Each structure stands twice: as C-alpha cells, then as structure tokens.
Length: 317
Image (cartoon, rainbow, N blue to C red; front, side, top):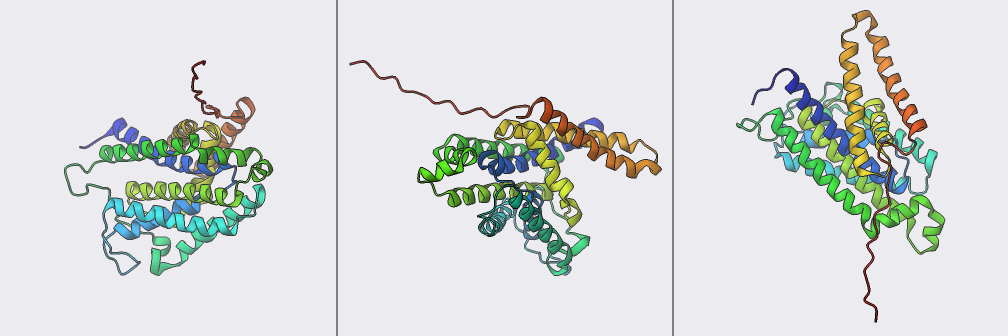
C-alpha cells in the first residue's frame, strides 16, 4: 500500500512514537518502579538495534553479519543481548545510588557507543549497517502501515506485561524499595536482587525498542544513539507523561515526539544560515516544556496511582 503526503507522515510519526513508547516503558521499569537513575538508555537502545541488524541483514565483508535471520529472531537476539549487558552493568553498579548511578550509566553508554563506532569488523564503524529490512519484505504486506501495526502490537504487548508486573507482588516490592529501601531490607527483601531484576527487565525492553527502530529506519549508525536522541528525549517523555504510570509513559512519548518532530518541520522552513541555531532552539523548547511540566504538574500529566486493593467480603457468622 503506497502512502503519500499527510498519511505517510502520520504513519511515520506514529511508528516512531510507538518505538519511543517501548523505550519509555523500559525506563519506567527502572526509574518509575524502582527509582534507579539510569542515564544510559542510549547504550541499550544501540545494543538492541545493532544486534537485530547483524542477525537479520544479508552477508557483507564490511561487518559481522550475513545471518539473514527472520525478524522475530532478530528482535529476540536484541532482547537477549540487552539483558546480558544489563546483568553485567547491573552487577557493576549494584551498590550505586542516584547521581552515582547516573554518572556510571551515562559513562557506560558512551563506552558502548564508541565501541560500536570504532569496531569496524563488527559494526562497519561510522558507515553503519544498511539494508535492515522490515518484516514481510518482498511481499504484498510490506508497507509502512503494516509495520506501524507491528509496532503497535509490541507496544500493547509490552504495556500489558509491564502493567501486570506493576500490580504483582514483585512490582509491590520494587515500589517499596523505591519509597523506603531500609524498611524493605528490614522486611527481609533482598534489595540487590530485586534492583538487578528490574534493571535487567528494563534493559531488555529498551533492547526491543532498538530492534524495532532498526527495522523501521532500515539503517543503524552510532550517530543515531547520541545521548540527546537515545537518552534525554526518553527521560523527558517519561517525566512529562508521568513517572510510575505506564499509560503516562506512552502518552509522554506521543506528546514529546510530536513536539520534537513538529519543531523539525518548522525549523526546516527557515533559511539555511539559521539551521544551526534552529537545532539548538529545538532542544531549548524541549527543556522549557519539561520545566513547565515540573512546575505545574510535578508528577506528570498522568500521575502514578496506587493499584486498587480488592477486599473479599466475608459473610457474617
């Protein structure tokens, strides 16, 4: 199905918003549930994208690849690889809190990005990996609209799983650790184990988002995973939508991505000599939006709400 004009833009916008929604849900698992200040989202985003690109692209002497695996295998590999990286980083940073964890994770994310940028044998370096095909390639179903539906299914699936985790006993322990870690430890909970579990699950979801991005964009390179695009925007989405609220994470992804892409269209109309200033202005607008939300609605557009407790009625004897 061929799309043109506004329809093509809308499909592209919703697809990107869905991918960012998956990334925001992964961050919500770490920060919204457990209070882990992970500023290294871009690292897991990149690992997921490169893993699925390597697994699914055709052979090339320029980089490791040629496996030609199906779409779902590529996404599965992205989730598994991101989980493994999450375990390693989680164990390294297990004793770090708040700003110390933030410094460590953003440093590790930059190490990952620079590794992918410089290891030509693995990732083709700055030239990136092209020809990452969407599912149903070379069939009648291959279209941007079809891929939008695929991304929407993954958003719904991830939302359902994360929402179930939120109301589960495991999720209650994570929120207890976030609110009062000493009290949770006094209650006999293994803080380090629960924090590691939440970190790994969130990392796996971010890896899934990276895999979906690679198949949509069709090309991955280190420049796509700079902190601005791979970490800062996702944090703004979660904080704006409502940290701890999965619906807020999705809503924040749609609103912030709408503002980001909308300002790109507006700045594209400016003369070329103002393009550099316009790019900086876009970042300023996102920062201003975050400040307005923090002042007017510090808990986000959709604040976190405690799950309902269903009491069983007991018949009077």
